Image 1: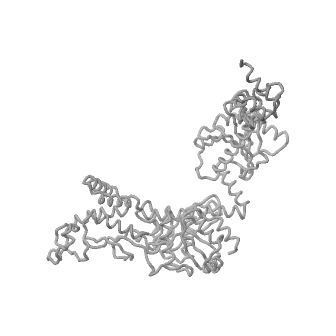
Image 2: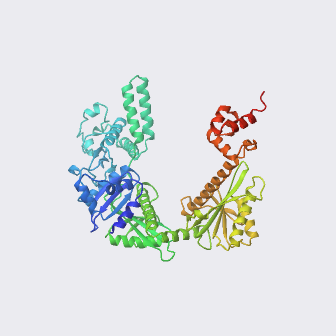
Image 3: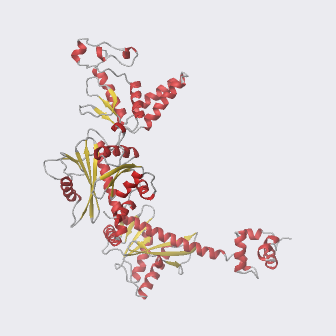
Length: 599
């Protein structure tokens, strides 16, 4: 892979948490790392001078970069651990004793024990986690122990053994930490009720438990047992801030392929996540160019077969966003909620990020393709007959009815053409009348273009609702241009797009590129008009009362306003203050003018 492509990958990395993977020229993964911000972290490898010789050698060997976007920094930490253990990259320093992250296990047995473990055993037990901190695990287990009296012994509490009085209660029973199921002093049904409540805590449903803790804290505080109350408070804080589980790993999800698709008019982007033993071990995104108007379903079915063959996947189940037909050998699941839906959402997020990065790369390497795609998208979204390569947007500007002006901004191929921007001083309209002002400037603009035989735009955008749009249409009709140029109005409040003769506005997706370009046009017209309006008002501000004073010209007024900032301060200034700025003769004229009525 060329250096240019590597540079492009660096420039288009997302500012999101995730895991990055470095590959050498042979396509072998040589390093896996985590990042709170992928763009900043990966870029630092190529912009800093590294003290470590190993890091310098690593950077020289990097030929390409891949990444997986996740929801949080914690997820990145867990995913990094999985990928290092799976691929064993040569430049990663493996954790001492190959440490795994801790889980909380609810043992698959009669009267289940609950304990922490670093090994997930497929024996029917339930595992919650993994957790990045053993302190969190210990706190949760302490909380559970404080709330519920569970056994800690490893006896086999089969019903026949309990009936045969095989066991005797231990010290934990006498301390009140266990209710003695080993002697039949607690029923299995009661014990299971506690287990169900504990599972809710581990899943993140703390409402009932938090209520119990708050009651305990208040009792301790009322009894002046402040140390005990503080301990409960600390446990409450940990419990309230605790996130139940990671979207990265769930031991119940094993040997599954996850596929999702994001598409536009020209391409489909299919993300693939491979899950093995509850861990993501591979992420790959495929770009497919549309030849016809293929549906997302058709593209996804094609991609699933190709990707599974490429990576030799034998998974018997796949997760997808909608039903697909890929034969009877594979179970197709469309997750609706829970952990499976979280994994699917993660895949969709990676497909979206890949699409965004491809857009950025194409914008750098092939701007014409980028422009064609944008123009094709705008043509479709706005229901136009031609691509809007030349767009003009109009905006009126008047503040409290003074100095009414209008602005026309021009975009070519989706980008501002500032040399073609035009300002208009309203000539035929008395007072603040936005509708009449819009009618005037649209007529003047296109009358001139017609007279000078200049090309007309494919699209006109009017900043305003139905009223301004109707006014602009009158001018187009007067010039015999109605129907020859597409025209729409955009209302500020809800970003509604109005079409001539259609009472129902069009609403575009708030994230669509078409709406973003229209908003940029509107904002540019507003900015350009306001700027002209301010300049005009500044000039008008010089036409103050001072200009009526005999012997006082514009230069003198400007000199005074630079020092005194306003005409009012000039009027209240002392004679010696005025003399210091404009000299004795002119100072006396101004001072006498403002103080002529004083005795």
